[in-house]
Image (cartoon, rainbow, N blue to C red; front, top):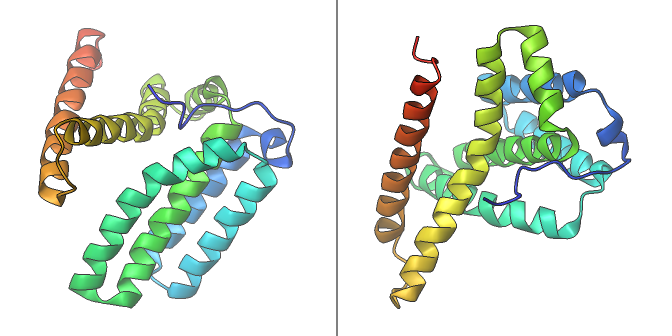
Amino acid sequence: MSDLMTYTAGTSIIHRLPAGAKVLALAVVSITTVVIERPWLTAAALALAATATVLARLPRRLLVKQWKAYLVVVGLLGGYQWLTDGPAKAFQVAGGLAALLALAGVVSATTRTTELLELAVRCSTERVGITLALGIRSVAVVYDLARDVRAAQLARGLGFSLRAFAVPLVVRSLRQADGLAEALIARGFDD
């Protein structure tokens, strides 16, 4: 598994913030960006994400690794939105997603998973805690799956084809989700 969404020790101001404050800020930005469709809000969310990233003082190698994963998804989504709904909608959707991915990356890299789980359990039930942890971890899992699919394509000497990349990625993601669902059911999370 990659260390894309793994805690990175540090003493930055973002590291020292309580987990609750970071998650609340992420939730507010997420809801605001998705519900209120305004380009200036997308720009503000991107500026906030950039500021948080700088203040977190994360290692450059981690940021490069995160953004290599994010750019594929953001680029594909932005390109699709550009073709179907025009540049303004593309900026709003892809920019909003980029801001949220960056902020989620900062939160996960500056907050121990145990702190996130404790927060979720304090605020609600154990299931919410598990859901939060799984959601955070899923970004890294899909990144690893995408990397494996691309490595397999390169090993076969294939060039890049969106269809040849997307189909195996979706199939592997669904298999991963099925395996996870079976594991959760086996542990009594089947309500």
